[in-house]
Length: 334
Image (tube, rainbow, N blue to C red; front, side, top):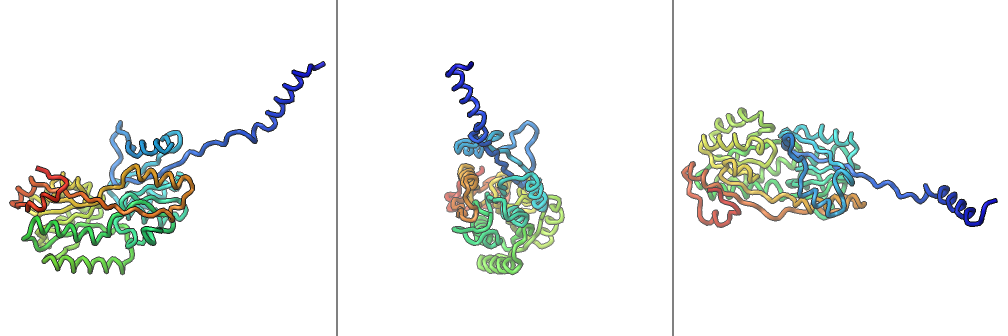
């Protein structure tokens, strides 16, 4: 015979066993964040992550290895590898892809219309056909952008002309990878030519898609009798920054670049918008993970700029940088 207390306990235990699975806590999703870097993978023993981004994610409740897994891929300065890296991330079923620039964003957008894409530093995403507008980008692309490529190049030409007023023929070292509408590209080229002409300059377009094109590109610069150099902030120009600085100094070419690292390497000037703050990138990621549609998240325009003047290079080139330019500089390399 079973006493009342034992009977009640058995019934309660049976009830818990019967309904337990229905009330079990759901398994928390572990997100997979894919990212593409234009550079090389870190050396062995070096943390491959971005500490500031990881800290920002922790503040939002995401711990790497627990709440999300990072799938990192590296283009090794070969922007033509972007499509294969995107395809690899898609095969690994990432929930979101963080891309460094407009060419990478284009590769991602062409590969998927479902996976959210967050841009870190895309020049002229509207002109590149990546978004419909900054306020309502539409589609699956959002993130951070800088003013149009044309605006940046014109400003860099103005700064270069201020620092080296006697220049006439400026070699523009760029890359066509990432495409875009050919008609829009032609319009931008015409606009740049007019802006250069207004400054008394001739803009010579030279391609260097990868660092392996260095010899061919520099030979073309010499052949075209360029007397100055402008470097787009693309992966190839970044990876070959030391070689390009040495070449420019040897050929006595004042140069302006789109990354501070180029000025540190020896370019005369660098002028570019500051990269998207990791904390703000984490906020975009969090909003998307919470259900926001990337096409409804406004693309944030990077407004702060950074000007670096390398006085050591100026001295080597026999140039006297105007005081007005030095006063505007955020950094002066002595």
